[in-house]
Image (cartoon, rainbow, N blue to C red; front, side, top):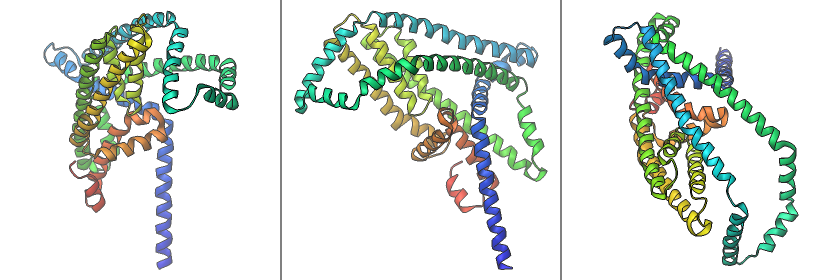
Length: 366
């Protein structure tokens, strides 16, 4: 009897871990779809007040109200692209005018001073690079693979963006038109004895996600103000547009701020291309780095702890581990959906396993 009980326990444990493994594989395969659903859900959440206005005040049908709202969101997205693309085109023209030889000479001077300070020489570095054949390997890779790979990557990116945009707009429309259909679908799958817990979970999830995305908007607004002030101070062209998009990059955890900082530095350099590189441009780049550092310190030690503790009810260290773990498994899309997905899991686990001691500790405050 005892051996039979042990065998059943082992079989249950194996079944549990196999189920988890299968779920992870499924989530990995449909990670793009999950990201589309999340984006559509956010847009539907933001567009719902407009739909309610059209339905209650203007007395139009819900279908027409949803269609108008989706069209407005589409125009807004197109407007952002129209703002950003010409700016990149203009900065690209500035890059074509860069005197790279002069920049190299200026960097060589700085490098010589730095090497002298460290007690080494430029010839030593050259010998090391020659021994490792870095230059030859880079040139070979660029000549044989870089250009085709870049072209393929751009083609793939444009295709994925087109499919993603259509999918998100399509899902957003039906979420606005039939906002209760998804909830009814979930309730129809649940046994009757779990209906109350399911409804409670849905209400809590809506509340947590609303607070989370509101916190994200506040976070982006704070960074936008800091980045705008910094770029206006150094005289970067289209400072407000650049600051807005760089603040948006912060949605992508840990990697996004680096991309935003790099973009601000490049656009600051191209905006002052006629100035002396070592005397003026490097100084402006230093100011930009100071502004980015202030923004990220405020974000990491004030904004994010406030958002995570008051919206998803999780410790910042807990969130850090979850983002890194999910990012390693699912890549960049996983990093974006890690925090809201983690909040949803905590709500569901608490509602259905509330009497478990570990669950009570883990989900405290939700």
